[in-house]
Image (cartoon, rainbow, N blue to C red; front, side, top):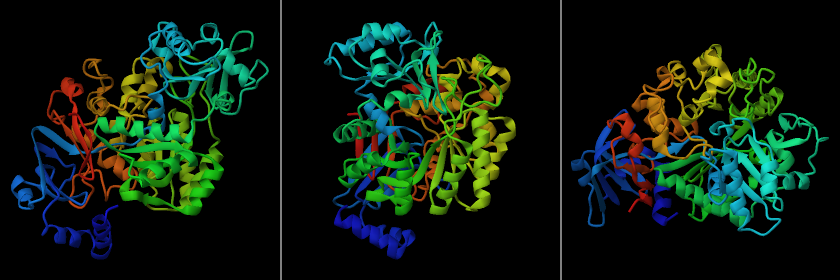
Length: 559
């Protein structure tokens, strides 16, 4: 932080934001930006034509005349006469470290057959020495002609000398070859762990697919990334996020070592995002951060550590989401709990006592109901008015539970593109009746809650235009289906923009610093080459990010 920035921070503490702004307004701006249209997400001034920045914060938002009154001899000016400016986007749920790591792994996203998966892995095996672990991610059997889970035989024949681990697109299942299973000492006699399932061949041998907690049987022998590889992955993930207009990411469930790497990068000024890190569910990590207490806006607003990530159930695509009634396409299966309800409640109680937020992954209707029940019990034991507890995903809800989010002040943190990725097969999993409580954005919004939006990257691409388009149209990137999938659950454009800006900020206790273009907040904004608030829905996907600014400085420039 520069000497001037330190002086500004001290003045803010001594004078208060209003007095500071009054004092600053008498001094020239560092930067003035004008555009065809600026959507502020600030009800006091919804649309503007110019912003002025000083010391990384918004000094003025309004007319060109007003901004130019703050122009001095050293003020930089930027004009985007054909562009639209919006507050910098915030992804409320993205695995940034995994996104960066996925860039160097075998990319299996979009594969249309198991043969194609095997082919990509075999090509990588030709490039690395025998014995080297090959890691990949992104396969989805629902996109193949044969939608059953694969078995390891074809992969093991093609790559016999390298251990291979291929994570499913949702992160809740993996496929291992024979070499990897041998190193992990997994065989027919290996029992399913609590909260996990080993998919088996007819003779009882492991098929190679391991669901939810069973993944740990294989992952325990996979060499962890080095410290340098972790740093590179975080930096790469942040740069990819910046490319899509993102200035902030809520990263769910990182271990202490990764969080300390985030802190190292932020302290060195090498982290081009404002990151809200959720601590993983590990007793030693939780004890450590509980002792330190909530930490906010560290390193000029680049790191928050005041939240915990827990898991209730698995995912719908791998049939691990916990359902009240069995899967329609798997009548003997109702999903599984990754954690016990008692564990969710106990961690919630401890978090409330220490001033931490709790965010729980829950996808199935049984999973969501159980989390709400445990939250309710924790709130009765430790009453806190402004806890902002969250359920991450909240995908399948029983209609009786939809009003409970508002009643308990629980935030449904959802990902619009999950609906438009899952819509092709969700009906087969759930039957038609349960779809009315699936990805139910409008039903939830009508109760008065907010919905912070995200991508769950790398489960979904971190493409912000895909998020916005899905939210307002309930269609995929090819504008399918006509009229949208269950269009009664769509968001308005205003809601969709809020869900990507101010609502994620509120869900992370950041709304006083970011999420809207309001004087006094960080000068974080994205420049778009189209007006996403007026362009035809079918043209939204063609919108490109021209530039992304954090604290008035470009972290991405298309040029």
